[in-house]
Structures are given as structure tokens and as C-alpha cells.
Length: 190
Image (cartoon, rainbow, N blue to C red; front, top):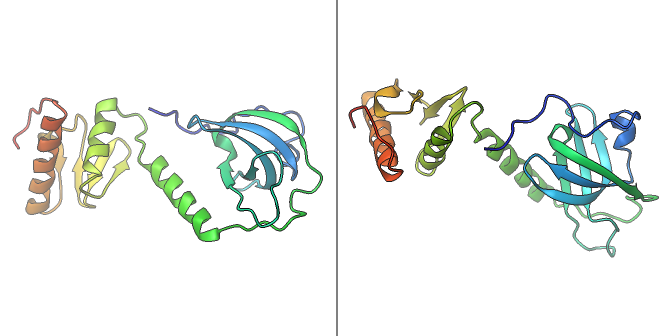
């Protein structure tokens, strides 16, 4: 499982403070808690909610070329290596596909919300499998399925609570099939 985000930026403070560290035009080699690595030019920094916008790559491309822009929560940065500075990263017109950027942001948030904090690998696998056929989300270490039914640890069919009987039975049925498919034992009735 991936590490949960840190409470404060993991990238070491170089004494300048976050605003100066992420000044427009600085070029960094960046590593994230997800394992992603890229080189990028700082385009903007917002201290609240602690997001940095990077243009990927180290040199501006030809005018009119599409550029990959990353919005990164600075708390998710595990390594930050200063590679220098460019004079004016916004001197050339940048074409930002806002809809694509919003879509990437939604996907990233969705992927983060899918990661259970403080749950077993088995619980995460069950969550991921259930999410393929039913809407699910984490509520602490419990799985809320179909907005009405709670699946509590250890995630057996006898740990399914709430919701109308037909919905509860459907969640139990799918949970039982999921556990069988994953070759996990189930102590409850299916």
C-alpha cells in the first residue's frame, strides 16, 4: 500500500520558506509519494492548500506546443532537487487545456480516496474488487457500499450492516463472490 500523505511537506525546507522555495521559474527534479518522478519548472505556488503548479520538462518547447502541467500537493513531495532557474517561464503563451487539467485532478483525488488508511491488504483488495461493480467508499476502516450498507472488519458477510434488506443481501452476495474469487474464507452466511 502507498504511504498516507504527510502532515507537512516532506521536501526539506532550504531556509527560504515554502513561498521562496516554490518561486516561479525554479526548476526541480521532483519525486512524489506515489513513486512518480519528473523534472519541472514552477509556474505557481498557493500556500493554501499548499499546491505547486509545474510545467513538465526543463525547457520551454516551441510556441503552440502542448505542455504537460502538473498541480501537486506539496505534502506529497518526498524529494526535491533544485536544478536551476529559468528567467521567465510564462514569457511564451501557454495553452492549458483546463478541462483536461480538471479531469486529471478529479482522477487523482478519486485515486487517493480509494486508498484505505489503516486497513489490511485483504481489505483493500476487497474494496477494489467491490468498486468494479458497486459504488463504494471508505468510512474510516469500514466500507460503505451503495451509500447504505456498511461492511466492517474483518469484511465477512456477517459483518455487513444496514440498508434495506434487498440491498444488504446484494452486498452480502457480491462480498461472498468476491471472497470466493479471491480464495478468502468467509465465516458468515452468503
